[in-house]
View (cartoon, rainbow, N blue to C red):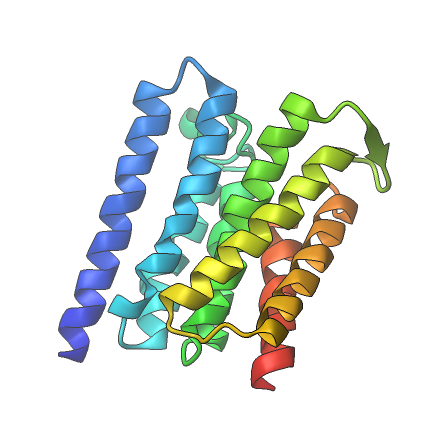
Length: 222
């Protein structure tokens, strides 16, 4: 039973990511910005596939781990020149590599509390993804702290979507909601928005999920 669950989980993750890559590279290639945001957000839905897995090492090293190498080989830093920058054509750069690293680390550390993994993934995908979309579209007032220009509207969107997705994660994983829990989630969303606004050079794909996941762990699990 354990092995069959892990096999099903790995297959579903691979198939799902393959479909996303086909859509972004083949169907949305004429709209690179849309392609980038679509992939950034939709990859986060792996958070809802986590319960299928039965062992931490399979999730961390078989499902998530290979994508670290795969996305790096398609990044601007690949030693394989023929595929150099394939994931950055739509602005992905090292973002997808950070995605895979984040999932692998969180999966290994928090497998027994999958909601923590989900919170980190969803804050990174939906929170950061919609922050960028809404910030670019509506963010007229900008700020720049450590070299990356962000907008106040985008940061607010980061707060809103991080809060919404953390609530969704708790409901999906059967965690009871109370006024105290909601208050903590609001606090986590505020911190996530601040971290996203302060983190430069795309490193928010690392900082946001780790901070949100560890905050939840520190408050409710530690």
